[in-house]
Length: 459
Image 1 (cartoon, one colour):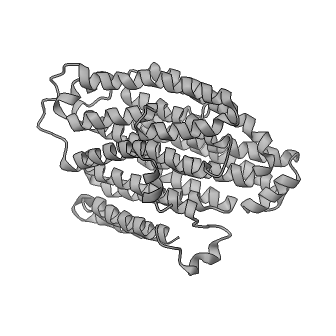
Image 2 (image 1 turned 90 degrees about the vertical axis):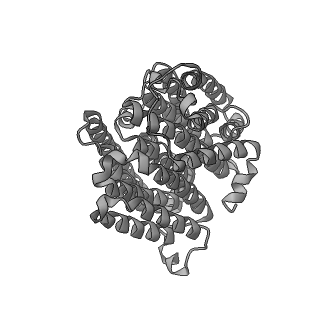
């Protein structure tokens, strides 16, 4: 709760800083507030907040995911100076909305009650609808905002209908009371239907196929830094919320929903990776890549054991680092070339080698190549799921093999094609190079010595 209060106050100050010099101080205020929040996340919660434990419990697990989300958001704020240079008139609002959305994510890490779950999802989502349409003169941005809003409202309807059925059967919003009811009444039709509806709603949020239809258009139409936020912090929040809901509240009806989730995983892995092959736009390809990673992450529900939470956290952190690494390269290319086709990346390695290397290592990590954090993350999830349903792991390996093809297209474009149109005076800033070096070091270090992740986050 202390972390939420700090981030909220930071967001308010950042918002009102827009009165001065077009909000140029909002980014620095946000970075300072996030650093303070990151420090506080290592401290035990104040006793005063114990009275809210029935609704919100900032446990060690919640603190872990909070730290990960804050680190990723910090990286995005460092990139914001260049990425938001076309939004100078309202950049303070964009930073503020990102902070408010982060608060919603932190609530989803700690909710103990279905009411808190609903509040967390809405606090996370509503700022995103606004940020997706930040480029007011761009029709794609308007389409992205409207599509995200309409699909989000549709998913919220499923969620609330499911909550109503769960409350009607279990007579409680508390996760553990619902769990006890499910264990004793696993064949209760109203309860099972509520479970399926809530699973469907959260499948929309994390973009599991066939509920992913909004993702490619929204990711492509939104400002690239906001797209990165959706690919990382929003996906982390959605999956943690889904994991807590299904493994705590609906543990008693595990056999009723696990097969449905298995079908969604198969559809996601095959559809997203084949669609990724067909793309000519790098940003849209990365959108389908994000959908495919939702399928890999969902393997966490199969063969659940004591290490499942740690495996989930490691994979989400590794994937988020790789996403930031690729998208920071895309942000630069999009700014220079005004497009995101694969051809736009031709010859990037000759003019911005650090950026190209960062994107390449990030793509290799996404593909699960050894000596990267992505390989360790995928191996952990695959090893866990192998004990429960080997066929899913086989399909996941096939999906990973397919993904290498479209990841390599981008790497080949950057390193092996001649291109002269990068002759520009607008070079990558020192901040971008520092973030790039950090991402390269983190991906390789965690790939070689994954235990460092547990050490760094106080586990």
